Image (cartoon, rainbow, N blue to C red; front, side, top):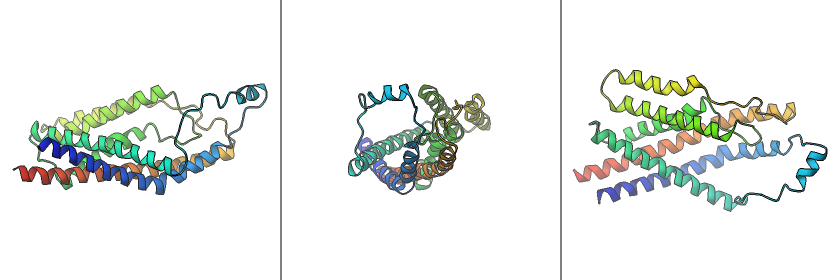
Length: 244
């Protein structure tokens, strides 16, 4: 019974976080993406035989994607809700581990906010120090290398923050700092020219949009993590208080 209630809390917290994220994206993130896509359409096209050769095959292998409008909104919202549910399940598991294994106080509304802030730092803030959120039209390095560095950064940052919270020895801070800093010492893979193929004017506009996109995605990520964290903490506090 308790396990089922905890899962329900994670599902409801994820639903609230996913809806909050979707609303924030519609307000801040999506307008910037639309502007970047418009600039991307102005990218300098390859001229000559190479251009004509590829034009005949440009539509042969198009990938499916949701249509603009209601279909895209629904698919985006569904994706956000599922992602937020994953965040909530992660917070529930880590909160329970910290409480049972390391004797920490059980999660509450306030501690849920703290855990949510830790999730934001782990999954967004720390990786963004090396790899900025990428707009359409902005080139990046190979996807595999970026994914590898991102995963390593998330694991090191999350482990460092968890150990700093869970352990009682003063040495935990040294270990936490080392884990958090190591990925940035190695450095994230960077593109040589992220605005290759664009005119100087378009490149300048994309650069300006990239700064706005970083702020918008940071706000969106912070919102979803704080909503998921606070809802998860509040729900667990109420459920566990009834059990005791």
